Image 1 (tube, one colour):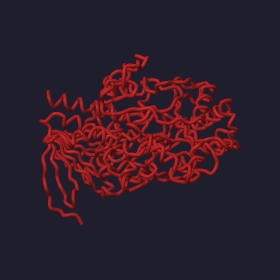
Image 2 (tube, one colour; image 1 turned 180 degrees about the vertical axis):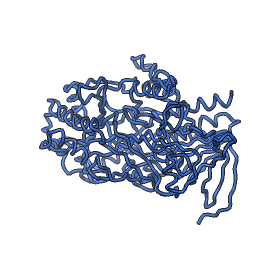
Image 3 (cartoon, rainbow, N blue to C red; image 1 turned 60 degrees about the horizontal axis):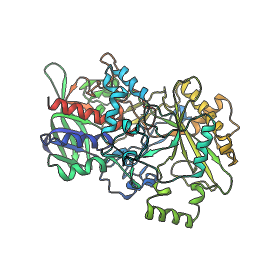
Image 4 (cartoon, rainbow, N blue to C red; image 1 turned 45 degrees about the vertical axis):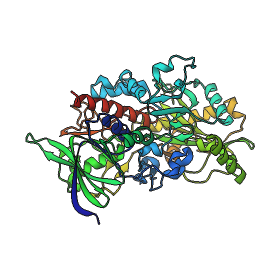
Length: 558
């Protein structure tokens, strides 16, 4: 039982959530010594060794030390299945447990945001400087790169390190060649606004170690700035809001549990909610900001009826095709099948910081079209030199690769809704995958694209045998149903506190991320995306935080 004796603390800015966005915001806002900044994180320190070894995501996901261990509601589109739904529960948030892939998406994503919000600040050409500002890209480590255009699209000297992967696999090189034979062009940079092509992913690592946002943005802050306070292992219970005379409300701080005591922290200027696309709508709903019917169901007094809070959930559903390859092919299945092989893998990492222990979950990427109906790449591949039945299960005993493909722009929409007034109780997460005819068609077509690649000469020499989903499934209905059987999240939830125009009844925040009808409150995380980006979502979230920090500091300094 927590001690109910309340303590109060005053700050200029309170940031809820020390994840991807929260760490950058804390760094930027506390750079001005006049700003007194508090960063609150429910999880603990990022001192678990598996956070920092790239392959350690295997031991961080579904581990209550580092993951909230959410699960989705049984999903009709997945034929009634429920999925593990990882969210980071430690300093660095999801950047401490994710796939480390550096991916911005496509220019059209941001142009669409500008149309949705009526604010040209979200256009690609205006977002690119925010990506570049915090970037430290390996291509610019010296001046020897012959492609001067890298300097137009990438930055150097920022906190967010981007490196090439420290390994190669012949079987992936040959899959890449097969993709090119199937009509997917080779690229050397996924991040110039059009990511069409095939290549190895770039990753957020430094010298073979995971580079999370706690290392990048918090470490310098914590050790050098007296105006910055970090409270980890502290659960925010609700936002504190007070009514204004004109009928609006103002967020004045947060109520939280820290070291067994209930504490109220006051914000003189703003509270910035950065708890992610699951945590942020949950906290808003618990605080009386959300759909009136849901709040009434849980007897929560209404601060602001915002029907869009927790709606518009979007995610990338990956469909895993597994191909058994001929005996003698080098894959992780075979490398890790003996103690000698495992010892060699460990020694290579210890001595060189390379090899399988430096691997991101996916190494080779490709972006292409599921059909000629699309004028732009609408599917993404994550290709791995390994196979298993499901995450957390043992590798198969035979050599194999996995080619997972996801619909970049799903039209299905889901929800996040509280099930209890207790902030420690997980909300109901209902992604509603494959709920539209278009999404089912893209799923079926994308599996056919995978087969087309596997049939090309460069990969056919491996004598690939399709284990999942199986060549017996050919029709649209069969493939869509199989997608429901084998599809799984790629951990990219967005959109649950979306930004939009004033006349959009489902918009939760305006184009500057201010919560509608509640002064002194912003949401800064992937939840504000009106539509999901065409690729991995971590780096776009950092860009959002960079842009928000600039606006906040500009407003503060007049």
